[in-house]
Image (cartoon, rainbow, N blue to C red):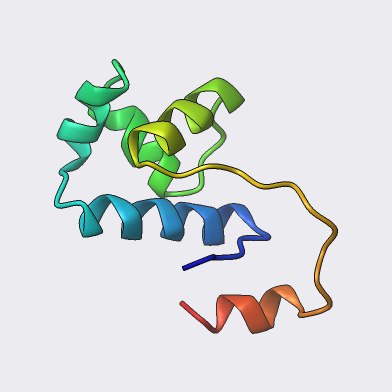
Length: 82
């Protein structure tokens, strides 16, 4: 299912949701991307992280980023989905 994230918080929630769907702990995901568990925690709390770290995490979760024109729904409407 396609998900939309417009804020760091929404993206963090999607990453955490996908990790738990896959049955991974933060430590297991960290091991897959050769980073510390605290870095995964930072991703999932919408802290500032490097783009390379985000992309590595997406790949480890079998996800990809799609850039497209923004839909007309507001960020608040999308956040209500969570």
